[in-house]
Image 1 (cartoon, rainbow, N blue to C red):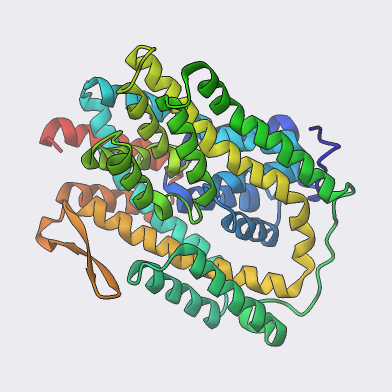
Image 2: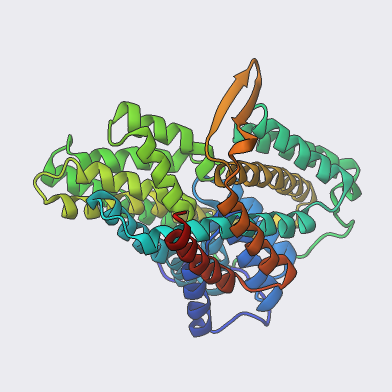
Length: 448
């Protein structure tokens, strides 16, 4: 598939050279801590505010499109922005670089975890980074909410989405569908309630045939996706753990709407109770590792795949099997998400001129802010309190925790990170580095 075969619309005079583009996405891949909220905010700050490669509305439109598809939304957004700026090669570079550094870090942490080598310096650094991530997520929520919630209706939709997912445990697709319907209907009669202007945007479209581009991307993507699983089945047998890993996480890639948290419960149940690849406490440990590494939170799947293959290694050594299992998991998790983008991208830009769909997408963005607020609260509870349990009373879902169990060390680090980020406006890399150093010092001196 060449760039000519999958063309994209012009993005204006601020499009970077490919060399500059590559360097920026490598930097983003190395420092994209904070989960999807922090990562999306960081991409917005770099490509919209600082570099001015694309405009605000195009960024939000791209985010809406990515949220409608299964898979990690931040990685899909990175792929889509890369496609806008440099075609297929741009999408490949931005999508791969967004994941690769974190995947290497997660692989190293999985090795340390499986081999039982506790490293105090690493433990301390991760403890400090976890507190920094909490502040990064809060900052991201503020930045995205400030831009997306332009009217009272959008604020109300965001609040309803938070109540629906946090207290009622409504499915994410239901929340998105409800918001889209409200936005679509409202745009027909009262566009101003959604912050839409009355003018129609003229959008440059791809010069190629979008259906041909869709078919080409889908055919190539499906082959690339399934070849490793087919090779494992042909050489090791259909019942081998690597085949099970490949097929299980391929299914997960198709139903993972709403990001990692939306499918975490299902994945944990299957990995622990059905496949018996790990224990429930190990699943929690894996999530903690994924929370403190760069890259999408869904990289926790790599930890699961590593341990599954490590413990059922034949005919390989445990370490070799674990590495192959991690690679297989990462492959079938992220190749599909890039496939969705390359196949659907040619149809997306023309939709910006459709006012009814723009209204639906504006409402979806507001609902997504409520979902991010849900993730922020969930993350804060687990960072700041020692033990949090999910409770249900009829239709109501809530989280029980002991207020007296507040982790004072984590709280102190979070306050320091907040002062650095909000008070002194320090950059993301600097805040993460400082908090890692403070976490190491606290771990060594106080046994954090």
